[in-house]
Image (cartoon, helix red, strand yellow):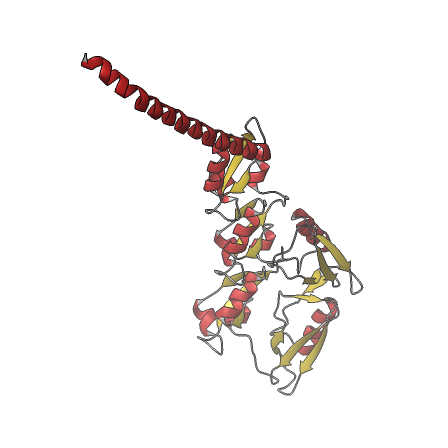
Length: 333
């Protein structure tokens, strides 16, 4: 299941139909980006099943108002189509913090919380002067996994953070529409799920690298693309069947022409390596039912032949009993 949250409607439609899924769109709240989906991205779903998605109004980028006067911050936020809540208990001087941070996406008309410093004081440290924000490395990593382009500024920008070394200085230069895996057309799923999908006939490719590490549950989940979904696995697509080697041997002994396909055809079998992939390209002169009759007939013939041999042996013994005394008398003269 691809993750389509933060995708445009067209991008979500493309991602879902690409893997053989249908979707229902609730656009009552807007016609911009997708803000929810059920089932969630990364979960398993049958080909042709439905995904419920809902869109929100087109997002806007939150402007940086830290260091600005209250009036300048108000103008910048209103120009971006955003509302704000001002905590002025500390004064009406420059803005010292904002939530969401600068560069983040927000729904048009949503609220930004801003705090003002005491009049006459400055709150712009080296990090904010460089266009960054002080946050924990875990927060920065989470932002990066959602598709943000995050840069660690380091040095004096780090040490200027009030909560250093708990917080470090990072710059968010852009906001993506998803993580690296989703942007590459992949989905974050467990390797076991990917293997099961492949065995069901899907064409699965492991993207790896930064696409893997962008998965929120990495390394439990990795990044895979599912290029297609078909109703058969590689073995059946090649005209074979998945069965135990003993069964294939029995068929061959019964007169069938059996060929072991092997390789990826074997590994596509759901019960591999218990089952392997074989083709049965020709049968004996009789089908399995008549073959059973033939075997039965052959068995009866064998019993008859044995009985005949026993009768002949008994006749020979009687003959020898009669003739041996006569032969003995004749040879005595």
